[in-house]
Length: 185
Image 1 (tube, helix red, strand yellow):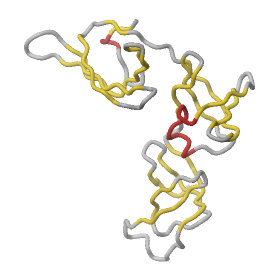
Image 2 (spheres, rainbow, N blue to C red):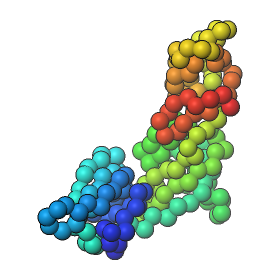
Image 3 (tube, one colour):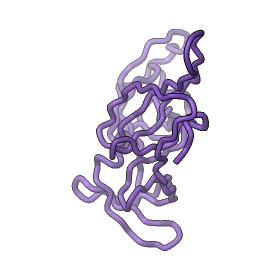
Image 4 (spheres, rainbow, N blue to C red):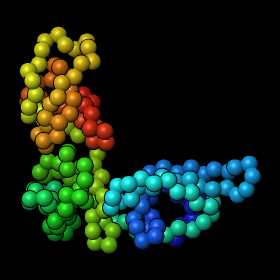
């Protein structure tokens, strides 16, 4: 159990039998009445975000989520094969558990997974990643002053918008949280 006064972003709670991850929280003291803690909680299974208010000092159940570093080996149908870096044990992870992180994974990548009760409930990627452009329209000289963009396909298959001067075969730095182009790598 953890007090609502000690909540932090990223903490995982077990509320009504469902895993909820704290996206945002705010301690609020109205002029009249007791203090409350307003939270935004993301359901780990469905991804749905809900707002919930707790009384300040109320106890909630914290889910103990284990973090492990694994290496992404390959994709087997809809599943991802991951290898534990310590024990070299391989495990299958369903696409639902990997989520949007799949758009940035290349064979051999290291990533952190969150495990609860033997199942993968989350994946943590670095904030940015260097990926190669495999397909885009040809670049045009002199198009560096405008902020015009064009679609480009990354080596993982994800399509992003890049500046007009980027060409096929170049490596670019991509923000893994928003899926946007940052710079050339």
